[in-house]
Every structure is written in structure tokens, then in C-alpha cells.
Amino acid sequence: MMQRARRAGALGPRLERLTGTDGAACLPKYAGWGRAIAREPAFAPALARAKALADGHRLAIAALLRRHGELCGCELQAALGVSHATVSHHMSVLGKAGLVSARRQGKWMYYALRPGAFLEIP
Image (cartoon, rainbow, N blue to C red; front, side, top):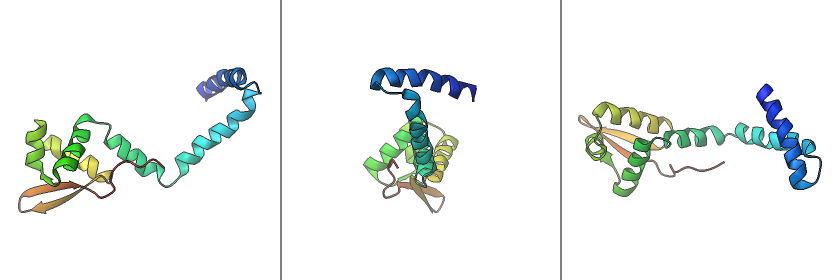
């Protein structure tokens, strides 16, 4: 709370210098914009997708699936040079974020990007 007040205190004069009007008057309006976006239904899934792709291995997995289509876990393991457990963890994160689908065939797991899985900004 104190940090927000400090930030708003510095922002008011800065906006005033930039716009030539009372900067403090527009702060509530802009803060409302940010809160409104965060409450939109599409915001939370978009944030989950962005967080899932913020890891280098997961972004590489998404790129591999985009370029090569469906791949099994062992192919991803070989391509990334990581353990089975690491691939499994990353696929779980990508699946929960709605980016990939998984199917089992015998003892193998195959993964593919879901249609429309790329990040959409709300």
C-alpha cells in the first residue's frame, strides 16, 4: 500500500509535466483500466499460457511441436537432452495451460499443440 502511494505520488507530477494537466486527476482512471483488464475472463488463461511459455524448455517444446506435429515424450527428451521426469513436468505445465494435448498409445505418450493454442492477448 505504501509503495503504491509512493508510486502514485511520483507519477502525478510526471504526468503533469508530460501532459500539462493535473496528473493526479487521471491516475484513478488509468488504475481502473488495469484492474478491469485483470478481471476479464480471458485474462487468467492468457496469463497461464504466458507463464507456461516463459520457460526456455517449454518454449522449445512448443516450437518443436509446431514444426514437427505430434511427438512422443522420448522424442522430446532426445531433442532437449533432458530426463523423462523433466519432460513429464514440462508437459504437465503446458497441458494445464491449455497449450498441448496428450494421448497414450501403449506405453508411449504423444503430445501435440492444441488448435489455437498460441497466446492471445485479451
